[in-house]
Image 1 (cartoon, rainbow, N blue to C red):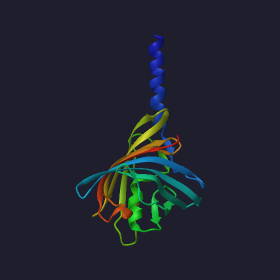
Image 2 (cartoon, rainbow, N blue to C red; image 1 turned 90 degrees about the horizontal axis):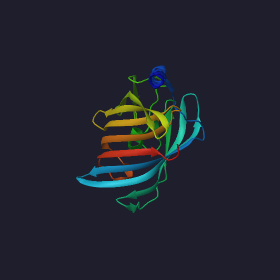
Image 3 (cartoon, helix red, strand yellow; image 1 turned 90 degrees about the vertical axis):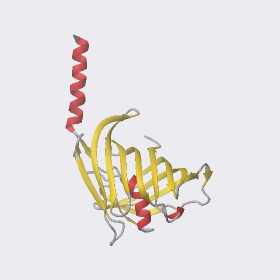
Image 4 (cartoon, rainbow, N blue to C red; image 1 turned 180 degrees about the vertical axis):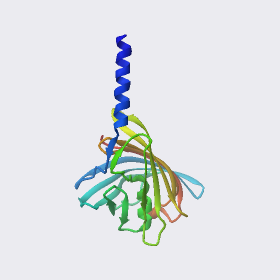
Length: 219
């Protein structure tokens, strides 16, 4: 009898923890630095290419409405060889919810970085909850819309996380069927992006289809 009671207690506590919801908001304070190990498989003009790099997000300052930050790619390899040039990084502005609102180097850098960023709902959420984020690379551009839905509570290693679906759309531009694993403290633990029409400005002007995976380097 005791094993059955123990199992029932465990199930009740688990369901209760999910039902209570998580207050999910951007975990970015000034001087925050997050590093992700990223792998990209892309098809450009009918040819497959693989790249790997560390994606680094550094929050330089924060106000009530926005965050000033720098995004950079380090240790870049393409098809197994080191990249021919060192990338300087890109100054960006984020909303208080974590979405990109501007990129100093232009709209294409906004588009390049936007899919791997996560727009937080800034409220308590649970499995089944949905929210939407809209951003615009430049004044006359089309909105980039991301529809989020919490699919389930899972483990990433030993860490509790929510698996969140993110459907990205941009009229006449990018689209994506993406997934984020978000810790209770708000950190993105890993992401899986399946993008159509993704642009990497310094690698050529053509949009590419790409599958991208990223995982936080230090949990």
